[in-house]
Image 1 (cartoon, one colour):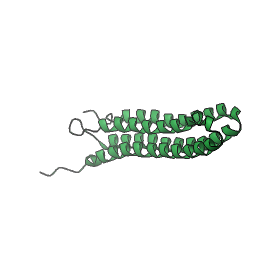
Image 2: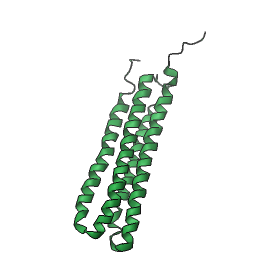
Image 3: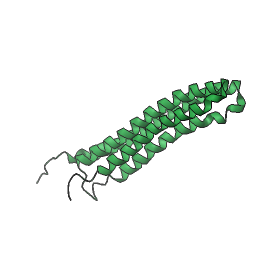
Image 4: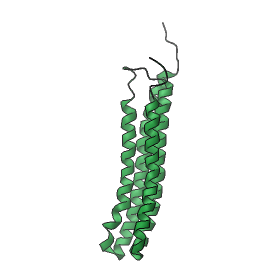
Length: 165
């Protein structure tokens, strides 16, 4: 007897796509932020080499974005086990939206950190009073990725609640 196609057979595809999206987009943001601020640090280091270590802050903050994506990708991938528990389209879409929320927030935050980090470390080399302002702006940019992580965790926790098994 042939089983009826309900669409739920494709649900793990969307779940795994969410895990991949979380990691890939977050790492793209981390890479962009690291590269863009690193260029600013290198340029500033030519004029004021004593400020290089102080100016590494944007590079470190950009690197953390990849960890957010990794956390969500692990949460999603451990939640996909169709053999142990039924995995419906609702679950796949919940995991996809979770990964996209975290990944795209990480990409956006990485772009903001890269741009602010580049301009900030160059400006800090010319006017040291700008350091605190640069750090505050970087914290607000990092918070955008943190919002995506929080929403991603909430959305992924909704998976598995579509039907009573």
